[in-house]
Length: 421
Image (cartoon, rainbow, N blue to C red; front, side, top):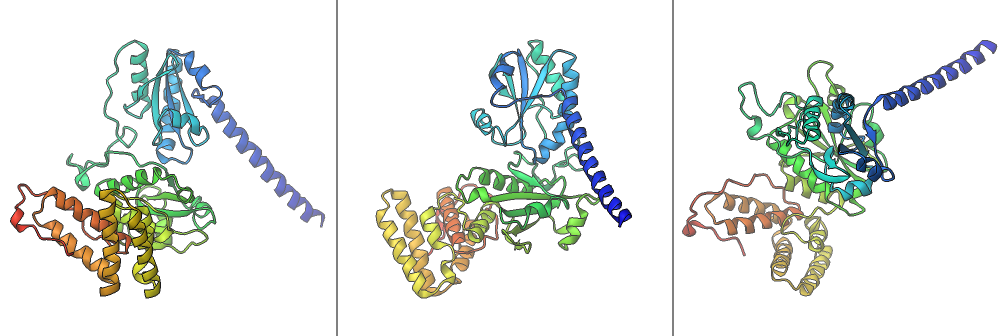
């Protein structure tokens, strides 16, 4: 009993000491950094005392922020010798500061001169790039800003070994509001009763058209302000098939193949069983999928929320329920005053009537018909009208399978097919 008790309490003591050691190490790392920590209370006082100061607005969970941190710390150390300070703000805590200075993505680096915002930093996110930039500013020179890349100034994976862009295009914007997950954090976020999580499984350095669509989705989600949107997260599991094979265990856990990347799965609250996303990797299609699955309205061009909510699931409900929704849609249409909104509402009502007459397959069949129309030579105005109708049909459950075709030069009016009335 004595030895068992000693062993137990000895183990507890060791665990406590390890926690203390970890805490002291974290404190030491913070204290060793030359980056100034700013918050709402000290922000104005600190930056007003400096002729120039670069401030990073970051989020602790942001992968790009984590990649920048060692470069930023190194830059702070080098600049300290020149009497130049740089700082950072946790934008997830200091929300008022982030809002005041128009922070839309992470990390955002902003230059202040004599306490006033001067401009956004658009240079390289490397220690040498930051040091060179701030040294020029301090010398009163206009710094040369090299175009920022998304990979910390290293090799840009959007270019292949022949120097050509991969996937047709490199990402022009950064994703915002994403959480990077791994085998340690996945189950702490996914499957809890707090969040619905839409997860992208992909290579660590994704690029190309599909990545661009994912970036657009992240920025669209970031602009949502509804309470429902606050219960939703976008996340990434970045997988590497070389070196330490980062997150390859997550790939194996869900039975994924790298040739299939990117793979998207929606994990609803309190469930570890995902809903697989199998539609086009396109921002509008993904938005409609999330709207259907989560009752979280993500407005698309030309769609109206009140009518969208009546449309979602319409084809699957009973005839009695369909008739009730149709009545509500007509009542809502009678209250619409704008000419454009009234025309849009009329199309929602027309689709409901067609579903009642032709059956639940009508939205999908009509979407395929319109997609074929969009492949033909039509005017830009007609093309925009067809695109809006596709958005509305997607609210009824139609899956959008084709990308918008490139505009044809000099459309011929006589070959323009008319939509079904």
